[in-house]
Image (cartoon, rainbow, N blue to C red; front, side, top):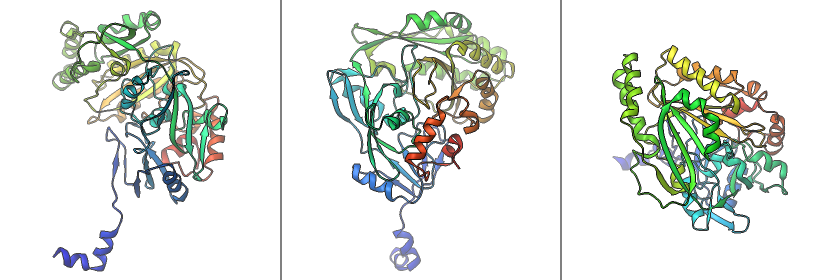
Length: 446
């Protein structure tokens, strides 16, 4: 029977048709059905694919962005063959990686040559190109985002031209390409400014949120890296510090214990069983401090920065001027309590140093980044819609990889060097080959 079907002209044509494979991001909130999903083997093949593509082209990494940066009905271009440490300089402590290298693989490779990233985010699932495209960051008032550490990139333009860019070669393109949203072309190599390899000590404790806010300046000043996870519908938060140390490494711990995962799982259970009883919920959450305990961890920097995330979620993050961080957070906490908004994920509160990159959320100002989350099976639209105006009140800039509702009209007022980026993008991709619907909206390109 199968043989007979295969001989039928229509069925034979269908069997010869290219296989269409759907794409979905990590949280499941974004998806698309691209005409093609390609993973070029080398630079020449990649340049040829881009130059010949008749429709839209979007580069894709680990699919960890929550915003609609990737979806297209054209070509999805994976850089899975552009990975690994390509070279390093022991004198300048710079190293070059394939742009598709997962951040999780960079730490061990750098350690082998005596180097380490100056800072890291608390998730290392992203690819290097995706992390710098969205100005992904860690925490620490003296540390910039990943993009601030970029010293060179290689870029394939819409015409298939290969550009090597740094402060002396194609310098205007380089300035824009450090945070590009994938709108300038396909980044194939990235050179990073690093430092010597080092170890970190992680220390965690639970304290009242208001007390931590009153001590914000002290906590941020006295620790290389400080952040807190505010437990919604309670009076408490989990405070975390990371500081350099020469102490020996501690034994590995389970994934459930990393980065407060056990803490988060306990909160989820409270939401499941007592969310209909606000008073009891607050009492139980406040008393978690009596049962939660955290041992210090010491290890290689890349092992301590990054945590395993065992629970999927959707996320909205804005960066506000650093001095407005406490006031902005207090308003968000009050709104959630007053409206009894349904959420249980902690609110993440961090600091990032200013940089000079046109589309970086931290351009020209030291910032406080505040992230709100919602479990991937719970409706995030109404929850985020209630909170987002608070970020606008404090001149917040949305994280490019997180959910937000702003478009070019709103965004250009937040970025003094907005037109610089638009001009470079227009020069490199006048036909909009790298623009999907989301990018067209946020960049104001018809």
